[in-house]
Image (cartoon, rainbow, N blue to C red; front, side, top):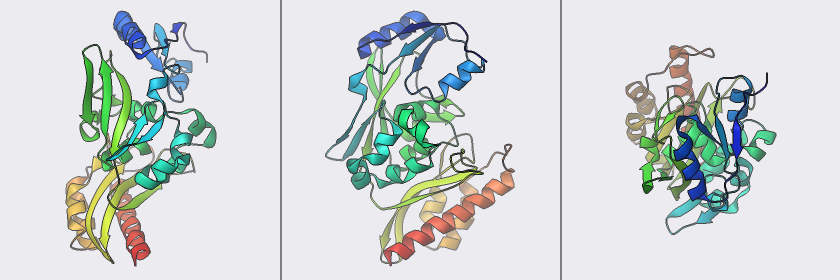
Length: 279
């Protein structure tokens, strides 16, 4: 199928893009990488009146090291994220997740901010943002505001981003422990049936602190706080505590019971690998 008719604009400043959003209202859509938007247009799932191309906004690109971690511009491509020495050193969880994002062609075009704003519950980067305690910078007609990643994602394709706002960047604290990242999918490049993104601080072979975030199991990435706390006791205790954290939602790929089982499998595999590596 072909996309419906729409008008097209390519602003060169953030202020100009915000004015276009405000003037057009609900009919406006932003496009950057377009890896989710273009298929939706071609299938007539979306029919915007105005497409606003923000690829010319240079201030939304790039990766910079900060005193507390890193800052990633919303227009940073997935491939650039995976190739960055700064990301690998300061937030290796992001570097570990990038190869699991779709395929190389999509990673070359897709954007970090686009993935966050899309808020697909089976996507890798939203889960990583929650696990790392990212704060998302948002620009709107009233100025700029920051939202914790945990509060930004609200449901399937639903975020705290207003219709007249643009995601500018993410400020991400340096990762405090070893990387935990695993996902299970039908094929390489598919969305995850179940996935785990997080980190663990270790004292020799004992996990002393951790943050576990599961994706692909619920309507958004879910932080497993009870299981994270129980890891200090034992891996078995964490696996049991996971029942208090997750309320999996069945889909075409797996039942709720299967997703719960897979989450436990990922928890055991990721933590056991981290402990083995530390030892």
